[in-house]
Image (tube, rainbow, N blue to C red; front, top):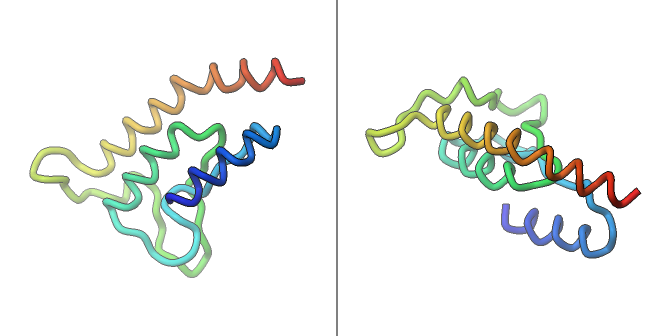
Length: 100
């Protein structure tokens, strides 16, 4: 996750604005907390998708029904991150259209 942030920023500096990462990770299985954190940071990427290999467990947000600190479900955290992404996407596309 840390390398994706620096990688995306490096691509932006080099003039490649539309880059991102596979949230929840691509290889191997993920956990509820890791996937929720990926979704939170991925909501600020110009491009992000929830994608993994065929051998790994499914990682759609609605599958994570665990509760975070007896307060909120991980799926709700991911839903809020996705809503944040949708709120920011108009700004990303405005900036990307100015580059062409």
